[in-house]
Amino acid sequence: MVVWSDPAKADLRAIHDFIARDSKFYAGKVVQDIIEKSRAVGTLPRAGRVVPELGEQDIREIGAHTYRIIYEARGADCYVLAVLHKRRDLQPELVERR
Image (tube, rainbow, N blue to C red; front, side):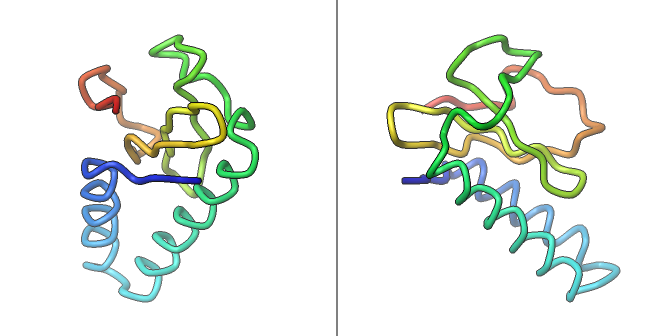
């Protein structure tokens, strides 16, 4: 099962709002693609790579468009912690663990 944290939901809304300034269609597509990609880790929680900046085996990431979907794998469950642009420096405080 994939569970989205409140901060990750806020990240997704901010991504949508930013892209929608230029294209509502593309904003919806990008958000949908991010959601679909996050569902994939629900079936294979260890499929993503370990986030190099954090170095914790349970905190992993997968990419979608120009974004990093950062999640915590706990058993069969995944908790999406953040969705960040790939060019953004990842500060540990941006990833709120559950």
